[in-house]
Length: 192
Image (cartoon, helix red, strand yellow):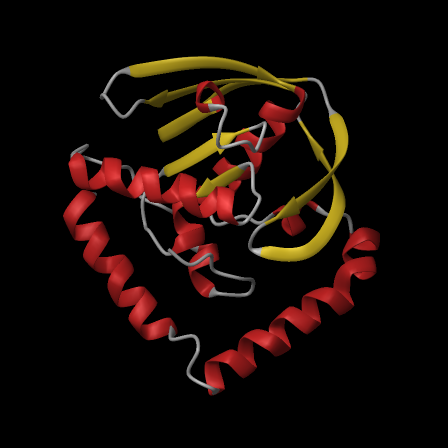
């Protein structure tokens, strides 16, 4: 799996609910975790690797040895939010870019597990922030979409640089939007 970088259009894709859980999906989840750890991440959403479904993985500790910190969220829904907190965020799809983002301090989430069971979580602080960040991805929202106008101006040159690199990679054939969209549609037909 390859993590898509801003401004790849699939990062704006609104993911579809998963309709089937099978061994192929379990293999995808294992690969999502490996990709996340290889990039030193704490969360990774399906559309960040070109997959069209409502799925993300999280390990708030970011430590692959801590298997008890691994969580899989299928078709997640935030049921309740409370409080507000500001903290610095980054994203694997926005390398080396960090900014302060306001998020809810506490959230309640419902999702489906890899065994097909409904799971209910109450998260606070860092795990709550990660879950909100990843659910945003599933809705085609990047953390930069939460920035104030002033904060956006502060990171504008970095975003412009990412655009320039992405356009160059397209011209050189390193990025094919058409094949990524075709693959996304194939997975959509298979799982959604």
